Length: 157
Length: 391
Image (cartoon, rainbow over all chains, first blue to last red; front, side, top):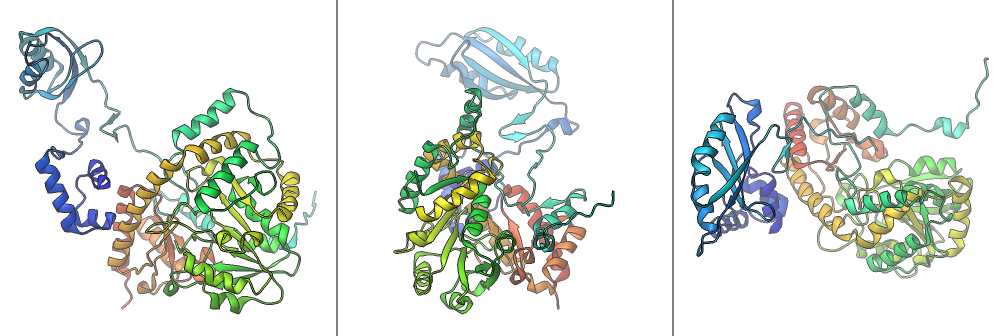
């Protein structure tokens, strides 16, 4: 059934009927399995992968490196929880290496994000320092290529 | 000036491959989506490519022994024993060739004398008949049918045998039909062959790509057949290595020492870089094959279901990566169907007739494409069929 997860990972819009055909099982088996995964938290949600550049929406993202002081009991979780509550924050990861939390933030303009970091993030108690890296161009996101079309260079035979 | 080139008459009479001819038309059009290509859409797995690259970095740019690198022949021997239960001596019974195609050519030229008849189950890949003719042999097609799951039946085989029959080409798993021969079918074929002295050229290039319960069984592994079979396979299809041009042939020593002479005079040896990469494929490529096969299987199920529900009945292929639906519902010939589908809906598929006259009424659809691509092409085919169903 790992195949089913892979198929959904690739395209969550395939219908249960299509998935059942592809895997050689029944539609009920597919829907039961998916329901189970949703209950168990294996599947956390379904979203479209959108290239906002091709729309009218002003959309900027940045990766913020946060260095923080872990709390005695909660470690990094306390601050991570605090950070993820901001609706500007798309993702929060605990990192190994030179800093502690990687935070992906989105906004309408560079200034929005800069202000968010200055006023909301860097003012949190445990935050020692921030470094903001703006995303200039998205070539590939979550496995999907954004830069033009992939060309099939195969010949014939 | 005015020099008249006199080309070999047999060669001149050969028709160019029907696949290529059709594809040339498609190439001149914009926005064509194709389901015509017969090679994996996967790139060669990285660890295999890496071994090719590092062999170049190490300066391994010389010829190899005529039969191929000993290490590669040993890994082929191990693989063939593990995978097919067949024991071949890497010193004298295995030859590394430039693709499975070279092995087919060598096999036919080594066995066929002028006037000999060569049995060719059809529909099948395009090369057997032209190569037989170039060797002076007479191609004798044996039609396989959808109602027999495109298997060769012992009755059809028996009916085609004459005192001049020398070779049986055995193209399973089959391109274009996806038909395969399971052990019980092979045993019946062998029963017929054993009454004769016919030699078998078994083209098992799709041997790793079978679906369903049981794995591919080589006809050479049926009792008494190894001594009269040349097993042909290669790296192109299973390991996604078409461009490396590497295949191999395994057969009895008495034949292989003759075959090697042809190979050595015509080709010297297979490409060295490809041989180093192929060792990695044989030794550590099994997981890649499994993953690609699982992906093909998903596409296969989807495409068969869609074709059947749009009114193009379709034998469920058990091997290779093609489906071969009947287009009878449209009342068109294969050629007409493909030409019009291309012109009206910009989708390229291959007419069944490219694989022999018995392919009339069918088209070959490849599933070496992403699901997204396949879905778009099938949507277009569905609209085309809807508009053109004969009353």
